[in-house]
Image (cartoon, rainbow, N blue to C red; front, top):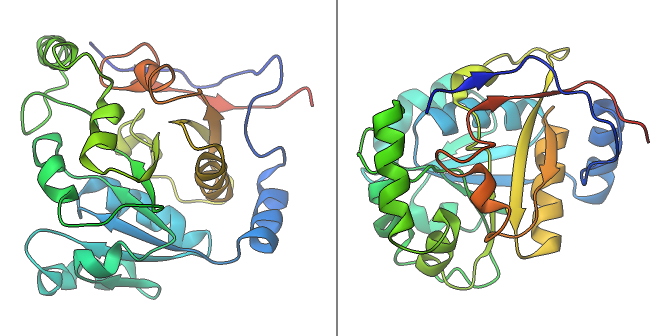
Amino acid sequence: MERTRARTLRVPGPLSMFDHKLKRVLTSLTKEYGEMRIGFIGAGRVTQVMGRHLLNAGHTIAVCNSRGPETLAGSIKEFGPGATAETKDQVVESDVVIISVRWGQAEEALQGVDWTGRILVDAMNAHAELEGDVSLAGVTKSRAVLAETRSTSSELVAQWAPGARLVKSISNVPMEWIEDFSADRPRTVLFASGDDPEAKDLVMGMLSGAGFAAVDLGSLAVGGAMHEVGAPLSGLELHLIKRMR
């Protein structure tokens, strides 16, 4: 399945997202949540791009990988102030944890943690191939493998992280589409699905405060199926222009 880039999205009615322009969103989030510590499991492109957006929004980030904090010195230096390299045990103590490892490594990466009550964002796509083949053949294969599980990819993540307050988000667009860190960039739509309304609202607020348009698609089972790998809302670049109210 080829990715389709759509430059704009005109919204004819209300969306389930924080109802303010970016500046007002940042103000309201600062009052309600203050600065948050965001943890990343995995140090690849999602962490590099989303980490920068979240730092720019006034949060701090903590990053871990499977090889140890000492291997992340270069990445942390590039991030600058507000970013630290830590162990997984330290990273999961964050206000929000984002997992962005390769799909084939996800189950192992989630092991060894008591996820009960922790907010976890699934920013992964369930690619059958380790390197993530996004060709039509590759995505077709990934869809077929996932279909055999009779679950959405995020429902599988929920099984691997029992007790987590799981939200699926961020993964509906490739990171190269959101590498513009300027203040006046378009508000790219990032979908969110989850079964915990409070956790989902917090994650959507975090994303809106970082300059995105977070759109609620419902539960992991229903909404998650709409923006996982190869789904109708995956690989679309949509921008929020305006709302009616």
